[in-house]
Image 1: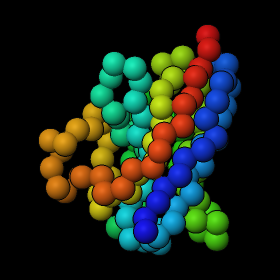
Image 2: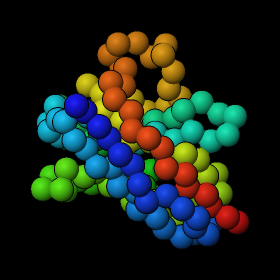
Image 3: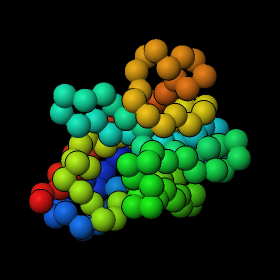
Image 4: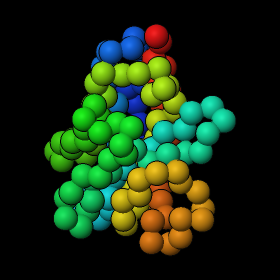
Length: 130
């Protein structure tokens, strides 16, 4: 049974940092790309950072490049999202997800099978105050 469980959200001040964790079970990291998505109120769900299972490359949205990084700890089946230099516009519910190929940008069912997310984790809320 595949499960992804995100945790670590909370309240941070602008300029601060948070680290989110995604505990993965039911598959190994090499089976799927692991991505981080976020959804702010009234907005589309957005893919912001992803590590490819094909070549290990990391893909990121321009809005988080240089501030957010993705890493993994295989022994703990955990993927991390380190968020630095947080901005109020980073406020959103953050999700980790597994897919065959990385997707960056506004996500919907219209992205097609190639980029379709196979498994979503429950979200964790990040609130950044100014």
